[in-house]
Image (cartoon, rainbow, N blue to C red; front, side, top):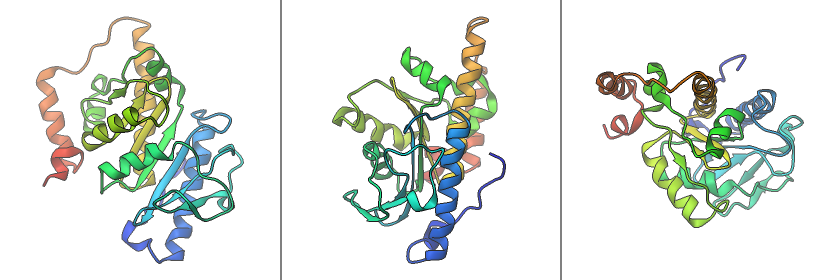
Length: 237
């Protein structure tokens, strides 16, 4: 992205119209960036941020991220009923809810159909973070591929909820990328890294088999991840 988003601490949001206004601008910036990167088309993709309790600020359905304005954003309650805004919630909101239900620390979720990562998901291949050492620190040793299931079906949601406990991003079979984080910036950057890795992976496979970082280094990289406050081991402290 052109500039880092100003992060709004989640505890300041509830009951604060000023902070909510900042989050609206942040969410809109992310949504526009998804379109400009070519990670969404038509009405694809969606973004949410938790703004207090079970309420979410969200992109609406049936509107291109290219033309989205702040006035188009909606707030939904725990039952996904619109409590602010005049548009309808997107059908995939259950995917976001599954992540939020699994992780109290998650404050934002980004879903894209980024071409490289989605292409790998179509052939049943997971994105491989171990091809770059730094990616292991950022994302862990695995970005799980959740096998195709009927969209928002019970099996898919259960698999996503289980994956969200241990991971910070997944790909969905024949679907796309779902990434989450402490705030919108972190969620976006994780989605960005997944697509970057997928692009490198596809280009590497055109030349020969993948060579991942040595297994002997993996433990040290994961320790660095924990030291940076990332991953399930850090959250248990």
